[in-house]
Image 1 (spheres, rainbow, N blue to C red):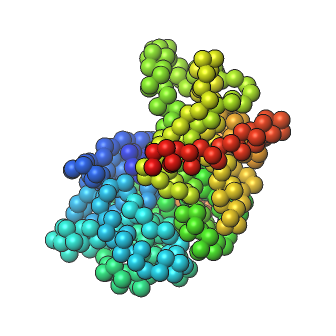
Image 2 (cartoon, rainbow, N blue to C red; image 1 turned 90 degrees about the horizontal axis):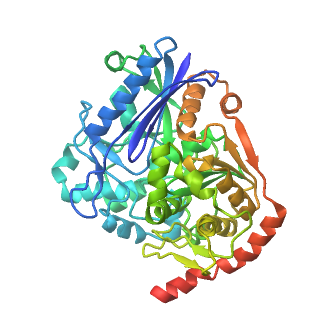
Image 3 (cartoon, rainbow, N blue to C red; image 1 turned 45 degrees about the vertical axis):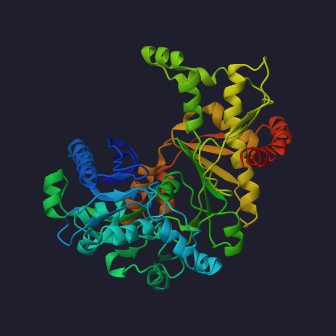
Length: 498
C-alpha cells in the first residue's frame, strides 16, 4: 500500500510515491516555462502544465505497479487560477501572482475599512493575490470570463481533471482576497463590493478532506488502480509545514530556496490592527485549528547564486566539470567567526514589515583585507539578520517562534544552518527529507484515506529529524552586538535613494 503526493509549482511539477511505512518508491519531475505575452505579464500555459502533471503521475504509477497508490493529495502554488468548462475543458492560461494585472481591484478592496477587511479575510491586499487577476479578466476578457464554469487553483484543478467536483481548500481560497477566514466560506460582502459572482468560484473545503476518487477513464490513462481516493491538499507552504512536522504553535518552517520564507504556526488569529502594522497576512494551515503567516525575503538564496554567477563563474565551471557542488567549495572558504561586514539583503522586493518594491541592498565595512570567504559569509549573515528582525516584528502581534524546521535546498548546508542558529539564538532542526512539500502531501493523503489514524501518527512514522543545530552561546552574543547595528541600514539606504 502506497501514497501519492503531487506538488505543482511555478516552474515545475513533481510526483512522489512513498510506502505507508515511509520508504521512497518513485519520484518524477517535469519543468515548464513562464509565458510572457507582454512586459509585466506572467502566465502558465495550463494545457501544457496539465500535460506535464499527467506525465509525472504516469511515470511514478508505472514504477509502483507492485505497490499501487491508494490515495493522492496535491499541494500547489498560491494565487494562480485556471478557467475551466463544465466539461472539464481548459479554457485559457492561468495568471501568475507576480503578473502586474489587477492593481485596480486591490485599490477597490483598500477602499473598504482596512481593519474590517482584515477581520474578514486575514489579508493585507496586495497585487500578487489571485482574485484581482480574475476581475481583470472580467473587465478585459469578458468572453472568456462569461464562458468559464469555474476558476480553479492548481490543487483543485488537478483534482477536478482527475474526476472530482470543483473545490478549493481554505488556504488557497484565502489567496484570492475573497475568503472569509472565520466563516470558512466566500465572503459575500467582499464579492459584492468588487463585483465577483460567487458562481464562478469553486466550493471551499478543509485540507485533508476526501473530495472524490480518480475517474476510471483517468485511472486507465495514467496507469493508476481504480478507486484511488483524492484528498484535498493546500497551499504549498502549508503542506511543506506538515511535511516538516510543524504541527503546533511556537514552531515554524524555515524554507531555504531561491526565496526564503519563515512560516510560523499559531492557534488563534492575531489582532487585525497589529497584523496590518507589520504587513502580515493570516492563512489556514493545512491542519485544523491552526493558522500560519509568511515572513519572506525575495532575495533569499538568490543572493548566494548572484555571488556565484557574478564573482565565481570560473569556479562554477570547474566544479561542474568535476561533478562537484560549487556552493560547497565557496562556503568552505568562510571564516569560523562572525564577520564585521554588514549586509542589507534588499536586492529585490522585500517582504514584511516594509514590503518595499523599490528596495536596494547594501554591503558595508569592506576593506582591502576582506577575503572572499568573509564576503560570502556576510551575505548569509545579512539574510539571517533580516529574519532575526522578524522575531521582534512578529512578537508585536504576539507570534512567537521557539523551534524551526529547515526545508528546501539550502537546508542541506550545515554551515548555513549553524549561522542561522547562532544569529537567531534558536535551534534549527533538519528533517531527513528537506524537500518537505511532497512528503506533506503524502501525509495528508494517508490521513485522509485512513492509512494513518492521525496526523501525529503519520508524522511519527514519516518525519525524521536528522540533526538539530543548536546556537553557540559565544557566537550568539557576538551576533547580538552586530544585529544592534543592522537596524540602522534600512533607514540609511531609504534616505540615500529616496
